[in-house]
Amino acid sequence: MRSTSARPGSRLTALTCAVLLSGCAAVNERNLAEGAGDQLSGALVGAGSSAQQAAMQGWTAGYAGVQPEVTVNYDPVGSGGGREQFLAGGTDFAGSDAFLDDEELAQARERCGPDGIFELPNYIAPIAVVFNLEGVEELRLSPETLARVFAQDITRWDDAAIAEDNPGAELPDLAITPVNRSDESGTTENFVDYLSQAAGDAWPFEVDGNWPVEGGEAAQGNSGVVGAVSAGNGTIGYADLSQAGDLGIARIRVGDEFVAPTAEAAAAVVENSDPLEGRGPYDFAIEVDRATEGSGEYPIVLISYHIGCMSYDDAATAELLRSFMSYVASEAGQEAAALVAGSAPISDALRDQALTAIDAVAAS
Image 1 (tube, helix red, strand yellow):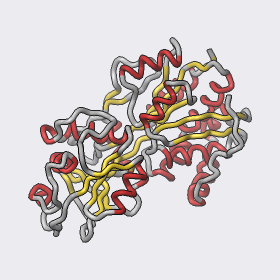
Image 2 (tube, one colour):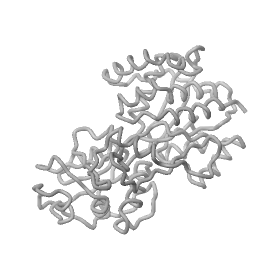
Image 3 (cartoon, helix red, strand yellow):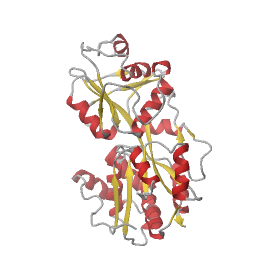
Image 4 (cartoon, one colour):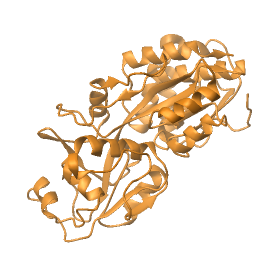
C-alpha cells in the first residue's frame, strides 16, 4: 500500500469544493458503501483518461469527506498511458476511455492472475465537436460532413457540404484547421469509432486510439486540443464536453435531428446499446450503437472505464479499492461527477453491476 502526504482534492476550485459539500451530505444512501462505517487510511494510485480528470477531482473531493485519511492519486496521462501503467503493475487501477483489447486482456491475466479484471463503465460523457470560427456561433454537421472535415477532404469553411448542413449561415472563405490528439487516446478511439460507424465511406480509416490522418494540428490531452482550438480561427477539434469551455459546440445530425451534446442525450444512447460479448464475469464493456437514429440520442459518447484486478496481493489495497470504487458508483459519487464534469449519471442497472464486481474484489 502506497502512502503520500498529499491530500485528495487539494487543488480543486472553490466551486468544485462547494459542489462536493452538498454531494457528501447526500451520501447516506447505502451508507456510502462499505467504506463509510470503518475509517480507513492509506493511498490508491491510478492513471489514465484525461477526460476523467474533472470527474476524478469530484470523486476524490467527495470521498475525502467520508474517508479523510485515504489519498487517491490520479495522473491524467491519457487512456493509453493509463492502461500501460496498470498492465505493467505500476498503478492500482486505470481510467480508460476504451475497454481493453484482446492483447491487453492477455496482459491483464498476467498482471491480475486467474481471477481476472473488472471493467466498470463509471463515467459517461459526450464528446463535443468544438470549433472556433469568427462570426459563426452555431454549427450543424452531418456524420459524412464531419468525417470529410477531419479526413481533410473538406478544407474550407464555405464548402458546399457544410453550407448544406447550415442553410442561411454566413460561412467564411477560410481554411479549416482540424485539431486532433497527439497522444494515444480513448477520446480519439471513441470519436473515430463514431465516424467509422456513422459516416460510411466518408471515413475509410481503422478504429484506433492513435489519430490516423496525417497533417492537421495535434495536441496532448483534452486540454491541449481545447487550447489549440481556442488559439486559432477556423479551428475544429474534439474533446470531452466538460473541457469545452467557451468554444463553439456543433450539433450533430442523428436521423432527422441535429442533436447537441448533453448528459441526457449521452445517457440515452448508452441505455440503448448492448454489452460486449465474450468478456469475463465482472467485465461490463459496452458496444455503443454509434449509427443510431433514435430521437434525442447523441452517439459521439465516451464511456470511460475503471479497470482493476479482482484480486490484489495486498489486502489493504483491495479494501481501499472496494471503498473508493463503491463511492464512485454510488448515487452521491455520480452526482458529484455530474455537477463538476457534466457527465451522465450511470443507471441503476449499471450501478448494481458495478457494485457486484466491487464487492467481489479480494486479496489473493
